[in-house]
Image 1 (cartoon, protein in one colour):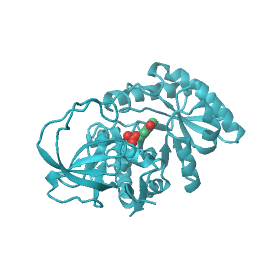
Image 2 (cartoon, rainbow, N blue to C red):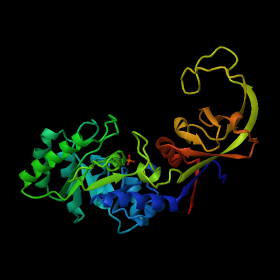
Image 3 (cartoon, helix red, strand yellow):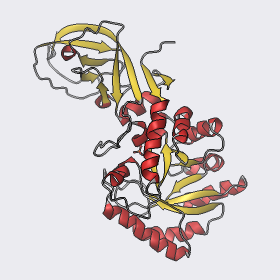
Image 4 (cartoon, rainbow, N blue to C red):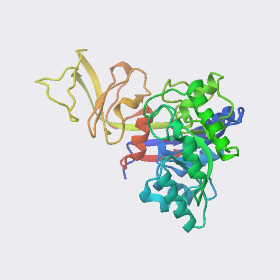
Length: 357
Ligand SMILES: *Cc1c(COP(=O)(O)O)cnc(C)c1O
């Protein structure tokens, strides 16, 4: 089978990144759940994160939890997406910790867990402003009470998630909103909640700015470990690698062509109306991968001076004039990846995956 396009996964670098972030968090008493959904739950990536010191692994999809459970028995597994009622039997069998916001789903999960003789730990998600999942803060006490009285589950914590739908930046204010809910819930339950899971990689900024609030004792970190940065400011965590993943794509044509197409312009392969700036004749490489394998806005050539022009389903166009090098057919271009491109490359069956390090 063809080995191109090919995604190289440097496990040593991922181990290093996990250890760096676990260290940063650990200094503030915060545990890290390593999130592997950006890699389709790749168990080797999960192993690297565990070796780096994460306390559990998390993924959004049950199919990925299954892979992880098979390959890494004994690892604490978190389901990060609210469970579908249709999948509670699998969730009850595979997950140790489940994020939840609906009482009805929690009851179904509890029933399924009891049939298996298990108790599933759940974390109630509270929406502090990003408008994805989670109960609105004014409902959290009531819902916590209902969850605490549900058989087959154990309400162990509260959590929130930001910077996903609304792009809301985690800050002192929204973290305080979560912590005030925690306090109200603790009063209602008459006990402390064990886990306060404050968010994802975007929360790493609070460490870097020195304003991480006391009381948040867990984060769920994917992108920060995988790509060494987070989604909002793309700020770097000191001492982490941003190149643990490399996508190699092979050149199939190299030619000098104009920068503006000839003829009347209608729509491109994806229905967009392209526009072009005339930069004269440029040397361009046509590469053998496309939107089926990568997110074209999130692939960054390593070769200085190379510029991504665009992609159709199976072709990627790169202006290589500025590289001052030849890119004949058969030569490979290496790319750094943003999160969307990583996700797409991992998910594409056409991209070979190779683990190194
Ligand atoms: C994806 C996800 C995470 C991890 O997000 P990163 O930005 O990759 O760190 C954490 N929590 C939930 C609920 C998620 O869906």
